[in-house]
Amino acid sequence: MKKIELMVFGLLCLILISSCTENFDELNTDQNGFLTEEVSAKFFLTDTQFRLYSPDRFPYWRAHLIHSDRYAGHFTFGHNSSWWPDELAYSYSAGFTDASFGWLSGYLGNVLDFSRQVEEGAELENEFMFAMALIIKGLYYQMYTDTFGMVPFTEAGVDGILTPKYDEQSVIYQGIIADLNKAMDIIGSTERTGVGVDDVGENDIYLGGDLQKWKKLANTLKLRIGMRALGAPGENFASQTISEALSAPLLDRISGSDLDLWGGNVVMKKDFVISQWAAAAYGDVWHNFGGGSDWTIGATLINLLQDYNDPRLSAYAKPAKGGEFRFIDATDPDDGSRIDPNFQVRLDFILETLDTAGATYTTSTVADTTFLEVPAGQFIGQPTRINGDTYPYVRYDLFSTPSDRVIQPKGSQVDAYPEIVLTSAESYFLQAEAAVRGLSGGDAQALFTDGIREAMKLWSIPDGDAETYIATETIADISTGTVDEKLEKIALQRWLVSYTDGFEAWTVVRDTGYPSDLAAGVSDPIIFGLGTLDGDYPQRLRYGSGAQDNPNFSAVEPIQGEDRQGTTLWFAQ
Image (tube, rainbow, N blue to C red; front, side, top):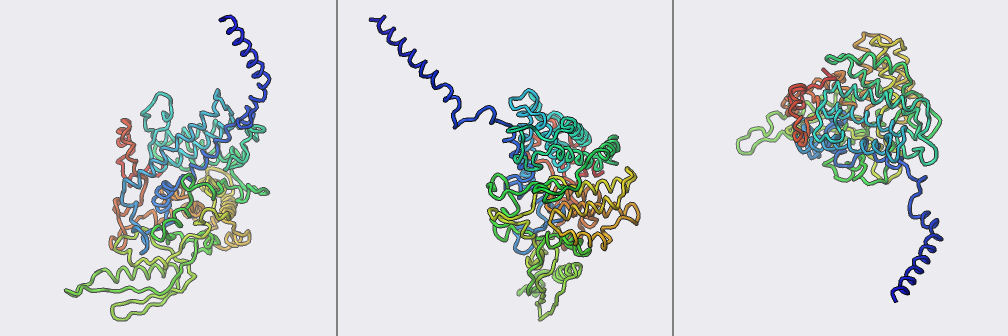
């Protein structure tokens, strides 16, 4: 009986094996799975890229809008319908700072994950994608260290090291330069990351997979870091770095394809379909929270654009709505004292702001009420760092707000502003600065005007308007003047082209001291919120709460200085 059962069992097995063998090829080409030739690390590149320049709404609001964009002097809070006076973030708040630190420190995991997928010996090894990872790492670390100063670099992400040391900024800069050199060596003369599925193509939302443009991006970042380090205490590498960068291709003018819509600038086109909880835009804050989250444009920016007839003015901002405004010098009914003893000082400050902007207005006073009429259609910037007592005088409709392109709501599928990665405009400005400083034999004026042309392309300014600006405005002319005067104009153009890139604009102010009215800080406590900094200009962000969990954190203060916003970082000393 057992022999019969075994024979039947064996026969069934043979039938099953035969059946499986007949269908083997079909089973291994299941259309619901992936073939080997369909798998590529390029599918992980896009996520790594956009999270650096368009993170989710939480850090986009707190790291960008509340901190860097406002430290840059581009955006302001503190109008009478805002949730906050413009002193916010100038007075330290752990909750807001932690959001910024958490995002930047946490992003390292994104770039390390992608690097490990494509490094030598990895399952999805691709040396050219690895070169991209090194360049993205450089872009990231430059932003990270210029925001906080000393951060883990040499030991960050190293297997077995759970508490990496904090490296000095000079070490980080040199480490970035070494990574960029390695990436450029890997790329060499290669144009694409591969063929077929190995070509990153449109998955590369910075440069469409063009490796030679990536090489220019890396070299321009190298030039930026060299110029930023130049003259910092003890640096001994900047001059060589600058010389090497100037002798190799940099971001420049290009035209002729959809990717070149913004000239040679490296930008990331906004995705207005993906959820704001993965990739946010200014419009996600502006349109989702009502007037309390709205912001105005800083007076320094509006005045600089307006004073020099800059054609970017209407691309950056909208005119103020204007209207009739009432200011009441109220008194206490019990003792007749003035509710605000500084009423006239604060009202005069508002009027002086209108005068500085060249605004047309009329005033009249009846009893205790001053009537102010401001016609619509004028560009008027709001002064930065207004305190809570001046807040009621800062009427929202008095001031310019961001252009529709900046605050474009998601889903509208229109041409919104791009996220700036690194611009060819800055490439030319840095080259012009090198020429002015005698570090190269380039034509400073020619390089400077080329930078202005590229800056205008970012905002679709007609070529004729750009050429008129170059030909007629003194801020576009560095052919005469002292070295300091020339450097100031270059710094101001770098600050202007960094609009919507608050981290870089803020760094320009700290590094160069321009615009000088921003760098000077504020001093009048009647008008301004002096904050934790006692009116000084913010030089960094404080570390987030998690930083102290690393025992190596204790080594930072003896080298860098106190963990406060006013501590000047190495590059700006």
